[in-house]
Length: 388
Image: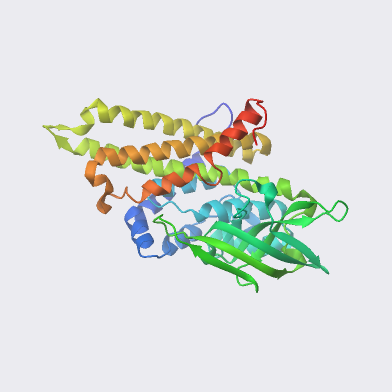
């Protein structure tokens, strides 16, 4: 998709159709059943990997599809629209796969990318800390030199899918030998490394992916655990955060589409006083508004992905933040209106909407809060004074 063409390429249209069929094969009933039982969506993840969908954005020489984040976002959106939003797609192929593809050594690429692409290996991402929140400059997880190796210590919180992962891409800090100041650095930490522990955080979310707190107690890492250049880590970090926002937007868009589809179907079928309830403008107009807002959010998401894939990291940052904001807002509204359209049935397990109420609310918080997006737009898009 270029700046003047709002039609997706034929290849992506075909990709969407194929992924949609896979999503329908499993559906929200499967997703909800697995989540309620405390199980993973392993069958769906593995099949998506075998079919090449999880690695469409990764280089062909490492088993990927050689495409961009726009195609991976389309995969996630279609799965979510079928009722199967795979949160780990945001972190494993999108963030970790992208960072390693762009900045990893040849050995790191050979070791990790083929497995990430086919779904046989997972890598998750750890940046958030208990006392840092959205302020990445206050990260205290620190790596120090031990000869040619590294020793990493610190804590992380709300890290998705650690129990499913082979490794975690940890955002830490190293000390500048000249100034003594700390600077960001990225490390690949195997989940079975001595000194690495994790504890599940109990959540009111019904999701196959769990959240964890991480404890790194003098974790010894080889020299090649460092990803990219030590002095360029801030650029490398943001190279992963833009895809995270695009994928977060796609996650929300897919759920919004799913909820809107359920609401429209119910409004057409459910009859009261001899007419479908969709006849009444009190239901029809909110659904029409959601459709408009959904399409607008989708366009911004596609713009952000297109800018990122073209190499415009800064331009993609503005659009990705806006896309994430818009998609989260319409997803919340779509699920809420779908529940309202169904009445009491909206919270019955049979109709597959109740589990999404908390799930879409997450989109306003992660991967960056609604308020921090507004801060970004105020400062960078409008030129207002920095507020934090």
